[in-house]
Image 1 (cartoon, rainbow, N blue to C red):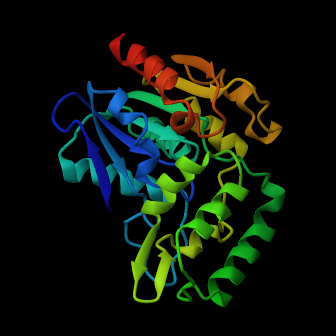
Image 2 (cartoon, rainbow, N blue to C red):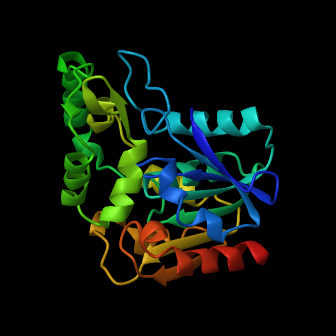
Length: 267
């Protein structure tokens, strides 16, 4: 795994986890505003500059837990805090619930636990994931003459300014003699073979002991499937901050996000 380190040795240890198909550069705008935190922002496997999983393997969501704990062990952090965005927030929730003795504080940005799947859909999803893994061709690499078409493609997905999209895409791409290519493992787009159910997700959230700060965009209505309203009641020591800036508010509006994070760590 690759990572970016901010304020090394100068503050409380924090592991920062980005969202799906993003990378460690997701924390570039906010990290300089948190000088009292020693932030290790990971590129999760298959993202950014990190290696891909071996051939023939899925990206099981729960496997990211072992990746993060291994990173903490490698850097020598027995105790640390977690700051996660979207998918990174979901991973952080599982770690805080499963290793409460290691997680001091928890900052969840636009994510409150993992996706909760309907058990009725599990068989269909396993079949689809199996077909993708056996029939896919993840080694096929498309090249681009410049970064601009890649940035445009990311902008079409929404909720990012051009500057933020450029920041992420510069780290998610590489260059060789044929042009610019995606570093991101295409298997990350495959259907997950098995999902955590809503009941399981809530079981994890109820086991979180660390003081927790949930930061979300308060100007939009989240999809009902996120089930945030009910999930907010499950974490015993939860504070909620509603700000503005969209799904990537830590990138698009970092100053107020950093302010609430600083207050949270100073308590």
